[in-house]
Length: 475
Image (cartoon, rainbow, N blue to C red; front, side, top):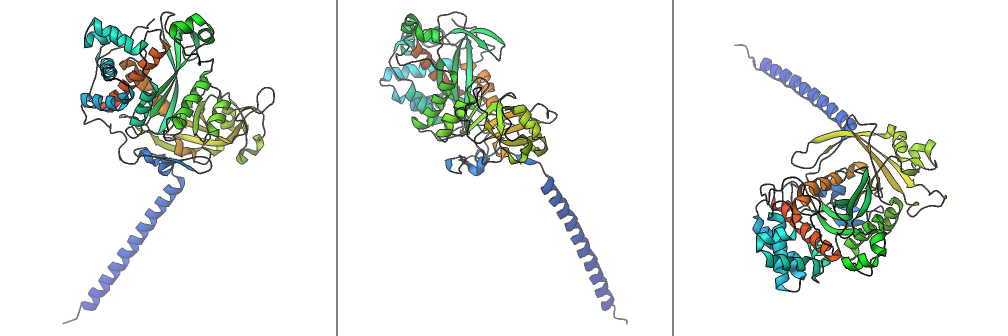
C-alpha cells in the first residue's frame, strides 16, 4: 500500500502557508486603515469624565497645577440626588448652609423660606410663602427675617459653594449678567437701562451672578447688585434701601472681578476657569486683574474686538494694529482642523465642526497706550459647527499652554447656565423679591440660590412645584 502521509503533510503545509499568508495580508490591510484613520482622524472630545479636562488637573500658562478635578463618578450626567428624597436633601443642605445663623428661630425661618420657594406655585412673594406656612403672623415674621434682620448672607453663600464643589462637581465658575425686569421704581437698584439682548430700554435691576457649573447642571453661589449712580448719589434712596455707606459706584466688570477674586481669596474655593460673555464687560481689565492672580479666564467675544496677532503662523498679519477678531480667525482658516464633541445634557449628541487658534494680544487703546492686560499673551479660538464656517464662536483665553480642543467642554457652560436660569432659577423665585431693602434683596437671592441647588441636586424625577410661565414683574 502506498504511504500517503508525505502527500497529506505537503497538503497541510501548503494550507498552513496560504492561510498564514492571508492572515498577514488581512492584518496589514487593517493596520493600514487604522494608521490612515489615526493620521487623518478628527479630534474627539467626550466629557463623560469631568476629570478628563487637562488630564484631570487645571494648569496655568506656566504649567503650575491649580486644582485637581473630581474623578469619583464615572458618569457626570448622573444627578447627585437621584436616590435622595426632596425632604431629606432640604434638611441636609439647610443644616450645612444655615449653621452660621446665630439663633434657632432664624434657622427655622430659613428652612421655611427655602421650602416655600420650592413648593409655592406661581409667584414666590413673602405673602404667598407665609400663606403656605402659617398665615398673617408668619407673613410679618418672614418679612422681618428677610428685609430687616441682621443675619449675614455671605457665610451662607460660602457654605453653599463649599457644599456644591464636590457634588456637581464644579468644572468652572460662570459669570452671568442678569437683568431682572420690574414694573415700578421702588425696588432697590431699579433703573431705566438699555438691555442689548432685548435691543431696548427696560425698567429693571441688573445683577452679576457667579455660578458653579458642570456639564449637566449649574447653580448660583454668589450675587452682586449693580447700583446706578442715581442710587449711590441720592441720600434719600440710600437711606430708604439701607445701602451700606461703603457701597460706591462701580461697573459690572468691577463687580464681576470682585466676585471672582473673592471665591479664591476670601472663600478659599478651588481655582477653576472663569467662563463669561465679555460683550458688556471690560475685557482688558478682566484679563489683567484675574491674570495677575493666576485665575484662568475663557471669555466669549464678538468679531469686532481689536487684537494684535503674535502667531508665527500668520507672519503676514503680525503687528497689524487693531485687527478685528473676526478677521484674525478668517486669516487663520488654513489652520482649522476637524473636531467632534459631545453636547451636555440628557439629549446631548455628538456635534462636529472646525476649530482654529491664533496667538494674540489685546490691541492698544485709542490713545495708543497699552491698556491693562494688553501685554499678556492670549489665544483666540474660533469654533464653527458643521455648516457654520463663516459664523464661528470666538473665545479669548489666557490658557495658552493647552490645546484648544481641551477647552471644548467649557464652551457650552454659558448655555448651561442660561438654560438653568430659565428652567430652575426663575421657577424658585429668583426674580420675585419686591422689597426696597438692599440687605433683603441679598438674603432673598441667597435662599433662592439654595432652593435652586436643591432642585438640581434632587434629580429629574422629583418636581417641587408646577409654576407655569413667568410671574408678573414686581414693583
